[in-house]
Length: 71
Image (cartoon, rainbow, N blue to C red; front, side, top):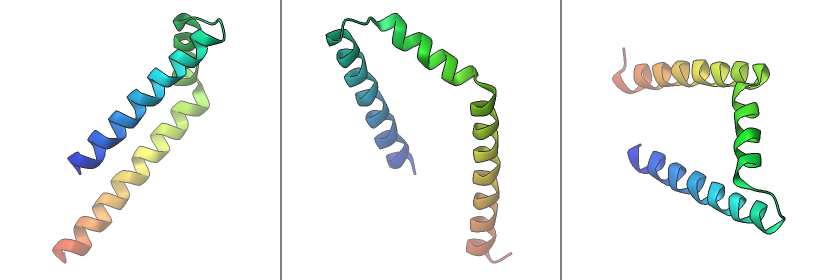
């Protein structure tokens, strides 16, 4: 599980760095990208979606735990 999270983090960081370089080459700066990320993070629909995904992940984890342990 940690390996998967590490891979996901590396891919996210690489994507971020590529995006920053791409924005710089188009004449935009780092602040534009940062503001876009802040707007996406604080968007009410995105917050609802993150909560829903976390809830579904918890449910899936509980189901997997019950199936694995047989309880």
